Amino acid sequence: MKRVLNLLAAVLLGAAGPAFAADEKVELLNASYDVSRELFAQINPAFQAAWLKSHQQELEIRQSHGGSSKQARAVADGLAADVVTFNQETDIDLLARSGLVATDWTRKFPNNASPYYSLPVFLVRGGNPKRIKDWGDLAKAGIQPVFPNPKTSGNGRYTYLSAYAYALKKFGGDQVKAKALVGALLANVPVFDTGGRGATTTFIEREIGDVLVTFESEVISIRNEYSKAKVDVVYPSTSVRVDFPVAIVDKVVDRRGTREVATAYLQFLYTDEAQDILAKRYFRVRSPAVAARYAAQFPQVQLTSVVDTFGSWERVTAEHFNADGILDQLLAAKR
Image 1 (cartoon, one colour):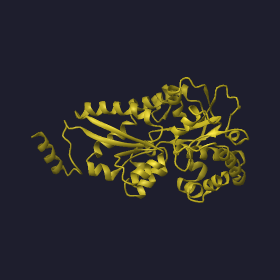
Image 2 (cartoon, helix red, strand yellow; image 1 turned 90 degrees about the vertical axis):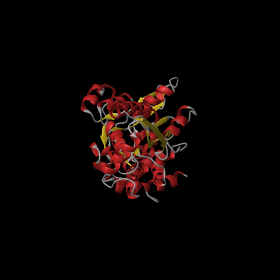
Image 3 (tube, helix red, strand yellow; image 1 turned 90 degrees about the horizontal axis):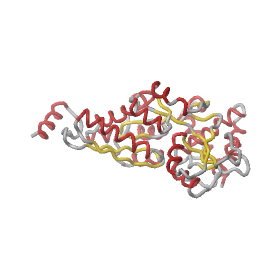
Image 4 (cartoon, helix red, strand yellow; image 1 turned 120 degrees about the horizontal axis):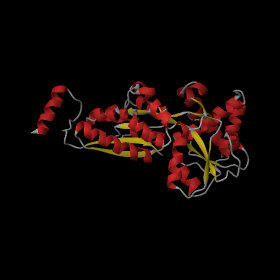
């Protein structure tokens, strides 16, 4: 009887998709980037408890992980994710162009739909034997930097952009010199993995390379998982800010009737409870109160944005990441 009443109420209210009774378990699928496994392993139980308390309804949250761009293509090709939590705007823009996500998705949640952010940092061998201090050192002969392929990974893409931003600043905007420095850096990479977790495995377990470039937020996971590894963290002088955008996949939530819980899930990321979890995992957060509590663990780094350095994501995609763009040219020279 309760099920019938809930279905009737949904019809009368014009709800889209199937209705869920309060005592019926509902499911969400979160398609996320490669190195967010441990983060959402903590976020999800906290939200599940909050949802159960407020709605008296059990919730199952499933995760899908991979390189951010690879995940975007999977969702575009039919992966039925209710929400996406990526590490670059272009991946959600792809879904918007496919009609799966609202074209104004950046206005659906605060801070351009980015509840937290990070930056690329260096993880070097214990004692920093190669004396690696900044992006320019990664282009020197005899230095092997390890990071994922910028063609498949947001992690790798931000590494590339941060190095390019550094070079532009160093050479006063001289594109030829900047391109040469980044080309030398790419030529030094011994192997390109498809995602951040693969690059970590290459550096830590396979012991390839002199420096792993990864998100600041990934450092704590590496230290916890590989506690015996002798590594040090080095902060470069400047980096591109890594915003982590989120969005609801409209076509999926409307078909499955999960819009309410999907919206609440992404809104939860902005709460102080979730922001505290994020800060403990070394993500930089938007909440002033939470940011103040954890300020001591985040060194000051000069951050720039993609827009400030390159004009726009559209421009940087066209010039650097499209077929035969600057990145393809430099990778071809590497071969």
